[in-house]
Length: 175
Image 1: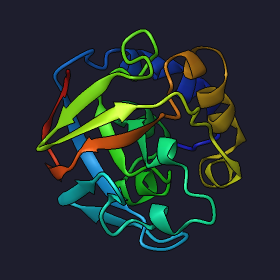
Image 2: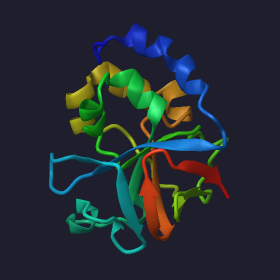
Image 3: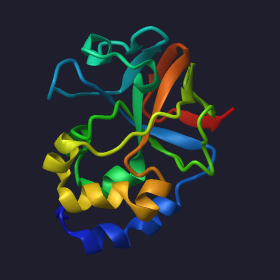
């Protein structure tokens, strides 16, 4: 599917809306060791100080603890990208099959993923220029306006409150 095919993207919103409200799954872990580099992992370690161990978040000029982790709905990225390598370019570290809307996960909500616990923060997560370049302007508008914004299709920000190992396929449970 072309990322600029707005009609297809809008049509597939129903697939995203079917995301579970609890009892989700961690579908992909992506480490960003350096700008524009991605490593898809089967297992990662979440740490209260550095976020995803080996990720470049801690090395940024402005380290924002409310944006330690970026999380995207696994179904939303599937709508935008056909393969994992392209999905990894979104820039998020965790992709979960779970409803990320404020109605389901308001800021302060906590999730257990594997051995770790994370907390959703109030910091907005929106599609940036890099996201638009990789997935197209129509896809960026789609995730950042109307229903896409309400459902947080571009994702949410989080921080690690209990470190631990996370693995692809781990259950994601609201606490």
